Every structure is written in C-alpha cells, then in structure tokens.
Image (cartoon, rainbow over all chains, first blue to last red):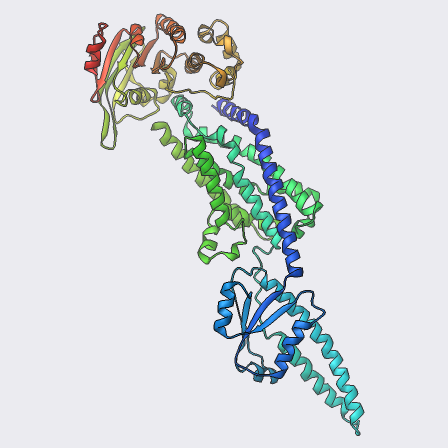
Length: 413
Length: 227
C-alpha cells in the first residue's frame, strides 16, 4: 500500500517534471515583469515625491496678517524641495476642486484658530482629502517637518535677536536675563504648540513595511497564485477513468489527492524558491529598491522559501481545489486566472490593503491569499507570525479535505 | 467459480437507474449487457467494481460452488476477484506504457508478465516505451486491460471496450478476451456494438432498472425494438 502511494507520487512528479521547464519559464517571466513593474513603481513614486507641486486649499472665516504672512512664507520657502501652493477658497469651492482633482485636499481652519494660537492653545485643523492623492500624507508630513525645522532654527535666531535688541534699548540690565528667559520660553513653547497644530496620523501602507516592501510581499503572492496556470494540463482531471480504476483497486480519493497534491506542492516549492530568491536578490540586493530586504543575509534569503512553506501550503491547496472543480482545460485556466486576480486584488496584492474599505480589509484576513501576504510581510518585518502559520496550515487542511470530498463525488458521478 | 448478482438497486434523487438488476454467470462465460445510452449500464459495472455503493442487492461469489460470499461487503476480496476497465482512458497521457504499468505491477512481476504473461498476450511489449499520447486507441485499450489484470482477477468488467476502435484493434482485443475465457475467466461487457455480441454467451437488456435475458439471434431490428 505504501509502495503504491510512493509510486503514484513519483509518477505524478514525473509527469510534472516534463512541464517543469515551461512552469519555471512562466514563473521567471512573471517574476521579471512584475519586478520591473515594482521597480518602476517605486522609482516613479520617489520621483513624484521630489517634483510634485501640490495644491492645497485653506477654508476659514478669518483675517489675520500673520497667517497671510505664514502662507506666503511657506509658498516661497527656498529650503523646501517641492512647493505647496495654498489657495484661499470657501468650503464649497474647495470640495468641488477636490472632486475635480484640482487640489489634493483642503484644510478647514476653525474660526478661533488665530485667537487660540496667540494664547498658545492651538486647535486642530481638519484636513479633507480623497484616496486619489495617495502620497499626499507623505508629502505633507515632509513639508511640515521641513517647516518645523526651519521654524526652530529661525526661533533661535529670533531669541538671540531679541536679546540683542533688549540689551541695546534697555538702560537697566539688572533683570534683563530673567525677562529673556521668560520671553524665550514663551516663544519656544508657542513654536512647539504650532507644530502640534496639525495632527498627521501615519498608519503606514500596511504590515509595518515600506511601500516597496509591502508591494514585494503582495506581488510574490500574486505570482504564486498565477503559477498554477502552467500546471493545469497536468493536474486538471479531464477524464475520471483513471481515478475510478484506482478507486476500484482500493486506492481511495484521499490517497489519490495526497499523491497528486504532494507532487504539485514539490513543483510549487521549486517555483517558490526560484521566485523568492531571484526577487529578493534582484530587488532587495542588486537594485536595492526594497529597503526592508537589504538587511537580510544570504542565508536568510535562501531560507526564506522554507519559511514561506505555510503560505505555499495554503495557496497550493486552494489551487488544487480549483483544479478539482473543473474537467476542462480552458475552463480550468480561466478559473485559476480569475481566482488569482480576484483574490490578489481583495488581499491587497495590487494596492496596500489599507486603501480598501473596511469590509474588504476584514475579508482579506480570512482568505488564504490575504493570510499568505500578511504572513510574508510578517517574515520580512520580523513580526510575530505564529497565528498566520496556524491559520495557513488549517486552511490548507480544510481545502484539501474539501478537494477529497469533491474527488469522491466525481468518481461516483 | 460462479457468481450471482441479486437485485442491485441504485437511486440518484428521483432517478432510479437500477431497481432490480440480477444475473448469474459461470466460469468461462461472457455476459453482454445492452441498453440505451444513460440507462444505467455503466452504473451497474461501477457498482460491481466497487466504485459506487449500491442502495441494495448482493454480488455473490463462490469458488467451490457452495459457500457464497457477498463481494460488495468485502472490498479487499472484490478488488482481487474483479478487474474493471472503465470507459475512457485510465492512463497517464504523458507517461510511457511501462510507467503506467508500474503503478499496478511491481518491477519483478511486470518483467514476468511481459515475458509470457498476460501483458505479453496483450502485445504490450510492442509499445512499452511509447508515451500514451502517441498511442492508437487499440494500444490504449490493451494497456488499460493490462492495468486491470494486475491482480489476476477471475471476473473482468469491461465498459464499452471496443467503442471507436477499428476492426484490427477490436480483433486483437477479442483474441485476448477469448483467451481469458478459455483460462476460466468470466467477462461482463456493456456494449452498443453488434460485433461484441459474437463474444457473448448470454445477453441481457437493461431497461427500467431491470436486467432481462435476451436471446440474440442476429436479428438487429428485433434487438433495437427491445431496447
């Protein structure tokens, strides 16, 4: 019985081996094209950040010369590598401009903002934007950071300037240092309070990774999902005669599935190793577009496909279930392709999952592809991944169980 | 050796292809089962092969003519006594005949069967290294029969074995089946092919879930009227 199980597995492997060069070629083509896409995406993104001129509207009923001065200062600041153009609009105009894409967002400044600012108690500015300006927050954060550093430098200059003025105009110098201390403390505290005027919540693109790191994990899962397509001619059962004959000889659907799935898993493990090592070395080490991978040692890179085993198990079990759902080659290829694209999309493999509505974010946590992506991200970021390992293995077992049931039904049909 | 099939029943929802299928056969006999497409012939054979589970009935078998036992309740003995050649091609297209046979025979037995055994009789030596996808229909069918004969069964179930085969291929299969009969084997064959009936010692018509014995006298019009 064990001999026959091993022979069945080795025959399946032999069948798959005949298609292996083709499978690897497809993987490499996908790998190269998606790596180039990732590289250009990251490069373009960085280029845009350097050169983009963003338009922001301010909305609020106030008149203050110092605020106008601040606005013009921001616009003409030489230290900034990119410019923010600030436009004065009503809320209605700003909302329309945002819809038309003319501005990336608008700041709703409360009416008592200036009065509060003078007393050092600065209220929050509400910033309204949409999803299209995805890099707005990073631009804005950089701009604000530039602004704060600039203000701090200028504030020091201001403090010393005030000291000189006081010394020049004051006759009695006995308590000038006490006054200067009070003055400087108030000035700096006001400056720091202004820095807190706008609260930026940085949630990251996802899984504590850089954008490039996140996209690497997403695209890896996407390629793994697509890699089943060249395996369709081997693993789609177009004729159940063989399974029936085996079943008649007490080779149960469970044993059939185990033999076939093991061979498929071996092929996919080879595929995964090629994919991960080439992408990690290429994107992480040679082209250095993924900072999260730059620190991995060569041993860690080689071990990465093995660490990815739970994800490979779950994804291959899903793909194997899809093989079992059809008896047509064309239907099977289409099923694998559309399932791969749909799952990759809803799992955040094309865009960071944080960009999606809450419902899809929750859904992605329960898909094998979503778990696989999150697991890969956790491996790269060094986060705790035990829960993903357990979930992925449970998924693999459940999917294989369903596949066995379907096989049994097909044999009896 | 003798066997008896008693009141085999099978139901799929409202459809009941087998209500009371019964027949009996002795050593060296060939039983032909005729019937329209979709009437339940393949279902009956797959039940007898142990692929499907019957809703009722018995498949009684005896070696000594006295103590019968129900093969449907003993899968191990069933798989040893009964060989099954399903419709279609139960082979791996990408692999050679030898690779396909290795699933059913261990290396030593395969060697023995290829030199003077059942596989030699089927002429499999002629195309042992040929991949299945490059084989003719006749080669595939001979190889399928070869795979089913691995446990040297006493009863061979053949589901439309000569469908879409040319005369030469059919002849080579008939020759092997006649040899199998002479060696004491019993064959149950489902067919739509008139020429297969020449091989049969008894013919049954499956209609309304019941097997009815039919005395085929070469009158094809009468036979068609009975189906």
